[in-house]
Image (cartoon, rainbow, N blue to C red; front, top):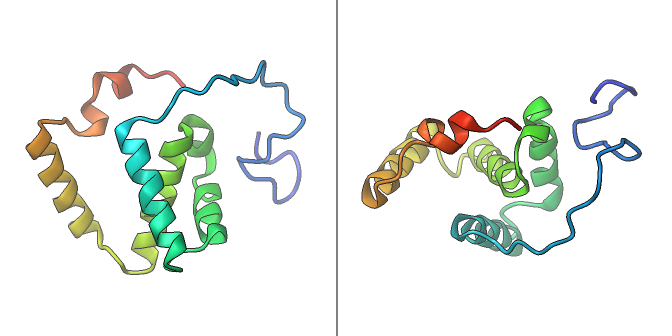
Length: 119
């Protein structure tokens, strides 16, 4: 989609045929609530602004259309926190490894869902 007009990003899909809109409330998974809470706290405490989060999401390029809403938001949060120096890649990796071990959760790229996902 991106590239039809100059400066068009992956989020610019207005007017493109995309089928029916799912209007059902599917609720939020635990990790989605956690990600939403983190975003809310960061914005409320003026650590991050909406425009920073939006820019980071739009910078995902083609990945933008392959991710679900909270995956986009979480990826953008990661980018902004790294850019601001609030976390480092090593700190993030160490914490993710710790949490995966504590809850016996595989790396997301090893997940059967991710391996079989055809988005």
